[in-house]
Amino acid sequence: MGYLFMSASVRNHPRKYLLIYDGNCRLCSIVKNKLSIKDSEENTQFMPYETKEAMQILGKKYLSLIHI
Image (cartoon, rainbow, N blue to C red):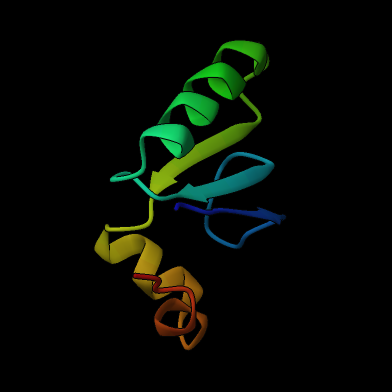
């Protein structure tokens, strides 16, 4: 099972929204692809949870979001 994390107005990001998704989850990746198609104004940045940048942005929340 995957998860999506959406945050408005994330610092140091040129786009309005940041969506962090589980890159290993097929459902999350499908949803991310559908959302990116709908985001014609490119207001959203999509980032896999597994990246170092996602870890830095989430900080202490990073480990609490890990699932098995």
